[in-house]
Length: 179
Image (cartoon, rainbow, N blue to C red; front, top):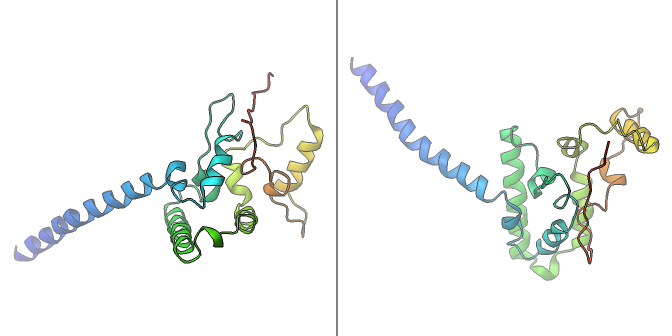
């Protein structure tokens, strides 16, 4: 009987400790996964301003693509998402305090971000990219990315580089096509 009581106490103690710890971790992840949080760092502010006027924010369907949708793995892959988010956050905080705004090379960081965005990140939202009846060239280009020949590695960002983080003096607006 004493053995069962000891086990029950350990289970209750584990729940009492784990639940608040998990809740705080989840709350922190949710609060730090917004574009407004990303923009709180002044080095990221220009990227945030570019995002606000892009078609990933302004479109007829009302879909808003947040920073983490492109720059982090899908949240349902919890371990990779948590690891990537923690790594990017720690790296950005380190750069913020060691390099400062004058050491932040936007062009270099932009190029690195485009290299690191995998096709799977784009295809989380853009799934049906092979059926574009009015644009045969786009269909063929997408087919060559989805079904590459050996040695032919092409990223979505090779062609679609200037969609989001580009300085614009105006709001770019994407209208839905009438089909």
